[in-house]
Image (cartoon, rainbow, N blue to C red; front, side, top):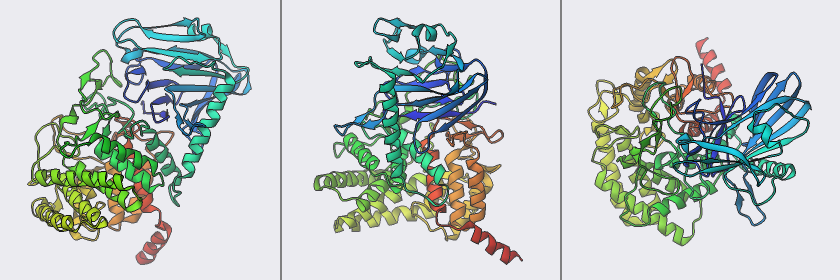
Length: 603
């Protein structure tokens, strides 16, 4: 059974996936949402890859260098041992800006012996839509370029013999060497010393970044790795945060729930930034809010649910019919038509983040005034729309409905707006918005509650359960001690949990009935159980869920109920922010004391 056993490397401009065997199978250059240079991930025959093929391997292992996004693949062979350190350069220069070129560096470190291997270097540019020609150029590099269609090119610099690479000849490693895939032609000679310096500077950058990460008493390793993953999903240039690094990895093998996630959803981005801020990383929040201010320059500007990473509004969706898809799961999509949808929950999630920002940071007057204008503009939109149906958090592509989660987040929008107005001493708005907040709450309590199910349901008048409703407590709509919330948690668990994992919902949507577990929903259930007092059960579920990660502790969007293999786009921001959130909730609990107390009560 295949699994998403990939490591991710990146530099906040782009990112790449390297398989557990050391094959570079996915990278888009020069930025996250560009066309792919290697896409074996989506078509093993046509996609293209950069593989290292040892002659006599006995064992291949992989791990991250501690507290960094530098990936080490260790090749143990009969004739020797070598390691490949994969990274994308990122460090602060003497001019106090960031060096983060669209490059992937593969540093070959000899451990001992004289191991032999071949290199299979096979870029297929522009999503492999047309023929890519690869040859040695007079400039002392290997150049790859498209011969028709959209022109694209790629450069490989290396200390290895270029003919040996192109002809897949056996290479004997008798000293450290390097390969560097570069979108741009280099102006300086690329030497082993220069590459080694990039490695050390990149290592230093990540160590310094990780040192700022809040240390947790429990699950610190998992939280730290998740924070590093979330950092890789942030785009330095604009402040946008991506939902995931891939497109079209299927939620279920062989089906059509395959989407492009290389965009910034207001919901996902705001959640990520809030968590990273709690973990001690404040700059990502400032950059993200600058991104928000850039995309909402005018008071009447409508907020979309998602944007391109440079603030693009139109994200037209089309299919790459020539690609077979991940394990034959078609279609492979580029772009995402969901950008046209109306989802009323995004406003509350964004205002929740802005409220956190006002509480935690001192802002300049002009910055505060800009944010305050955005707050008032958002409240105006929510006031006009909260009574209307929408497509909900799960982006249902069929009928608009009165989704409970969307209504709760409209309440959050008014609630956080009231709190922001109080902080800024805008008393007029406090009174006005408090009335709106009360109206939404009364509406939800009256229309979302099912007497039959004794739970808040997916949408008004429904008897279906939805895992997103679990969040009504964490956003402050209801208290964990409230019997209605406790009953809702247990009903959702009864109806949506299967073998310890959670469906988002089970009712049929426009693509049929969901068949895989949505990873973040399992974390939501764990947190909800913890909050209603089922702490031992919550911890057991958390430990079990963490065991379903790949070999590097990374998570995708979904998990197969039966095989427990990961599915969906990867690595998924939702999943990793949920790991940190759960660890934060658990951090001050002594589960051993609780267990001993339970034992005493039982005896």
